[in-house]
Every structure is written in structure tokens, then in C-alpha cells.
Length: 89
Image (tube, rainbow, N blue to C red; front, side, top):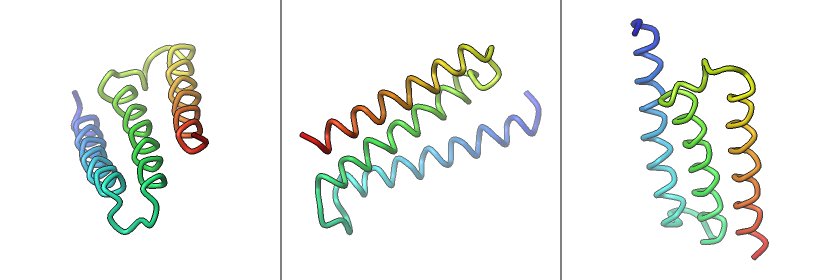
């Protein structure tokens, strides 16, 4: 792996760690008035993390376009669906 590729993975890993901390803060409703909003935010962040894990650590970023579109569409549809169902329930 090239130095640029390694730097990218380290950057993505650092962003995932930050997103995990933000999810914990949101889920534990630090600074948020609504527990419901905190959980919805944590769910949304989880799907952002799923996308980055799939693209960078499962190497789908360089996969054939139909495969990449399928994972992008899955993350989008399932993520919006779950957050929407949670907020509407």
C-alpha cells in the first residue's frame, strides 16, 4: 500500500473514532434536550460509519461501479428508513 493510501486509512480511522465519540455523546444526550433526537443522531452517525468502513476497509471504493452503487444505495435507503421509522414511532 502506498503512503497516500495509508494516510487515507489513518484519516478515515480517526474520523470513525471521532464519530464513535459523537455517537456516544448524542446517545447519552449530553447537551441535547431530547433523548429521541440524540438516538436518531447516533443512528445516522452509525450509517455514516458503515459507509466509510465499507468503502475504505472493505475496499469497495475501487470496486466495480454497480457494486459500489449497491452499497451506497443500501446505506442510504436503510439508514434513512431506520432513522425515519425511529422518529415516527
